[in-house]
Structures are given as C-alpha cells and as structure tokens.
Amino acid sequence: MLTASTDFPMPIITPRLLLCQPVASDAKKYFDAVTESMNEITLWLPWAKHYPTMIQVMEYIKECNNNWITKNNSNFGLPLWIFEKNSSEFIGNIIIWNIAWDIPKFEFGYWCRTSQTKNGYITEAVNALTQYCFRQLGVKRIEIRCEINNTRAQLVPKRLGFDLDGILRNSTIAVSNGALTDTVLFSCIDPKNLPILDIK
Image (cartoon, rainbow, N blue to C red; front, side, top):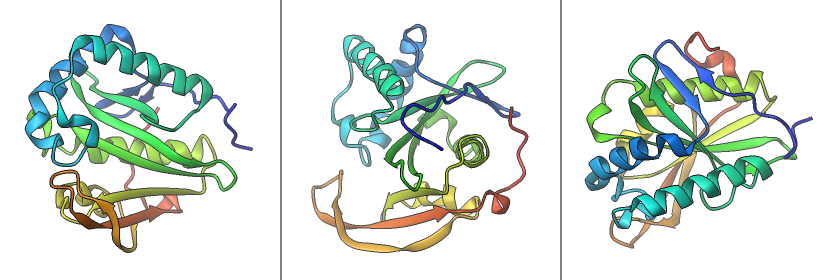
C-alpha cells in the first residue's frame, strides 16, 4: 500500500535523461536554468515573478529535501530535477504534488529551460515518471492540469496519450495577468497506453 512513508527509489534513468531529487551541489545549474528561462516561465509559474538569488535557491533545495523526507506535497511538492544523462546539463523540473494517498493519485507539473525546449525532453521525463509511479509505486491515476492558454504544456499529455477529462471553467487565476481562466485536465489511469520507453 502506497503511503507517505513509502520509499521512492531514485534516480530514474531513461535513454537520454536522469531524474533525481534536488541536491545542493547542483544549485548553480538550477539557478542558471531558471535565470535563462524567466521570460517564459514567468507567464505560467507563480513563483517565477522575480529572479532568484543563490541564497533562495539553497533554501528551496532544503525545503524540497524536507518535503521528500516527510512526503509533504504542499508548496514546492516533491520535485525531481531533470538532467541530460551524458552531459549532466540541467534540463528542467518535474514535480509531484496534490497527492491523494487513499486512491492513490498524483498530479504532475513541469517546466523546461528555454534553450532545451522542442527536444522532447519533458515528454520523455513525464513518460518515465508516469510509468515509474504506476509500476514501481502502484499509483492508480496521474493528473496534469494546464492553463487553457498554455498550449505548449498541453502537448506533453497529448503526445503521451493521456485522456482529456475536460475543461474546468473559471477554475484558476492566470499567472500572467491575474484574470480568471480555465484549466485543461488530463489524466492517465493505464500505463499500457504510454509510448514504450526504456526505464531503469
């Protein structure tokens, strides 16, 4: 039975990527990726309104590690940093949050650094984490929610064969302008529908 005390064996390795929990030694890589990508991520991520400092990044890593220990999925959730396997370049972030242990059900959020978009890295990472959660942890449902205007984020679940559960009208506040907006809800309940991917 999946509970908050369940161990999540890491890292997750795919043909191109390494997914692992944040560590302080990679703080500069994360900082550089966020700084490079601010013009894009500030449109969709509420925490990206101001350029971070290295002190803030270190505090963020500390809170992330505490979340992983306690499986506290509030605030920053349970993040995994995505690295290109051969070069160790920081690619982006994928987050597990809104966990319902009784089902069990997870929700994913993600972002990719600007210079590495359109390479399929986030699609590969979401595929890997989805399969891992179903097969390794016994999760029964994965959800992805996107602002209706964030069409690029919606491409990821569409490419992976997630089901479109519907449009949640007037369900969230747009990060970019503070206006009321809709949310697109995708879900996966069967990993057999996912593209084949070698995962270790």
